[in-house]
Length: 215
Figure 1 (tube, rainbow, N blue to C red):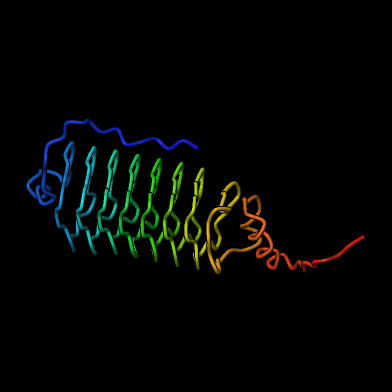
Figure 2 (tube, rainbow, N blue to C red):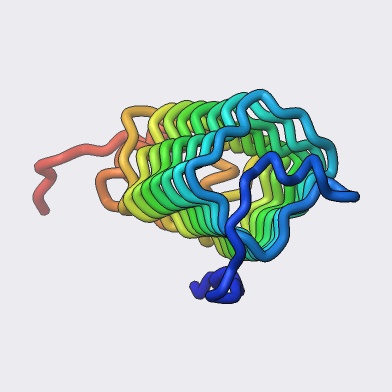
């Protein structure tokens, strides 16, 4: 599966996040934001386009209906930030902390989460298309009634993730680890799993596996 990378011009102006409050509309476009702090901000319909954020914090922010296209977050902290009902397209989150981040009801397309802490994150009713999670920790995350279309989960921690009412057909979780996972037998149809995972999921189907049988 190919994920489109953000299309960003190499020559970007430097900016501070708070420059957004001097714009006619709440937007940051064609810029690089480094080591800025934007905690506890509440901005509706904010626009990020062709922006690189590095070492910047957005802790406990509310960005409802965010419109984000061609954006990179590198080593940023977006813990407890709400991006509900937003549109996020061609974005990369690399080495970021998104503990408790809320993406519920959002549309994510061509988005990559690489080596990110997404524990307790909320993806309820989120729509995914060509989205990758690589080396991500998603412990106790919520994917209730999410729509997964061409989603890659590679070497992720899925312990106690809730996939209730989410169809996992075509989703490969064979490289992922977990002690327990919340999913139904119906949701698992067509999901790609490892042999050891298959043994665990067999209990959902009411199967009893016997070993050492010879003919």
